[in-house]
Length: 382
Image (tube, rainbow, N blue to C red):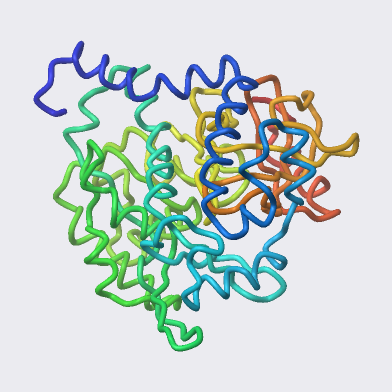
């Protein structure tokens, strides 16, 4: 793409983004198409057959047949898949097992990643591609992406007679698809994985030092990954090398996820460390990439063309796109692997098509969100 003329580059970007744009304009149509596609694949699995996926052709039947299910209820099925009974939940062989950074009832969650699932995760690049398409700053592709992702390989776990290798979804994603993206990630995921899967401060200092050594002479135009890690890396550079990222690079955009409040609580720290880079939020989890920020409005827009979204609100279960501004509810997402999965996140709706994840589904989350909005002087503004 570096050698392509601007008009051709713009046409290519717009073609890649068009399915997202179309789905945003008519989410109801897009969600019906996604449900149909998912049901075809669910019908190939033992779980889908047990719930009559092949006989379902509308939303009401889908809701009657498939219950909303949290991880702790899926866990016995996932344990059997890890032990080798792949077809129970998957219609493809897994290419990796992702572990969550958070926990469910004190335990990390294990989520299989398949080729189809991995292809959907490429949507994480939409925030960056849309930024380039709208700003026409094609010189971004002449630089590199500072890779601060977590390791793709953390360890192995024995399940029955099998040993299963697992890592973090961001690392697995980067390892498999970085060669197909229009900008090179540095350091490579293999180089990060070679340092091991430890989580201690010293382990992260090794990764940060690797990133510094590999990128200090590069043109870093993009920073992607987890927002708190990006902040920690910037502080590490100052403590260890007496420089800030903004002293080394003129970063154009940061595409970051993993925590609420990236555009409010984290914005001041990120811009102080990295300079006046555009910040674009990615909303994703170990289970998938569900949305990304598309413009200056500080909220994300769902990938209606890739996943099926419902939400459990005080007024009952409804589609995500049916939420009213100011309404909150617990997200229920159907992915290529997990039908009607209650992910545990609390979603707040703004003017369509904008949403925020404000935290986990806990009674205290709206209070914490309100306090953070007050302290950051955001007060509900997009």
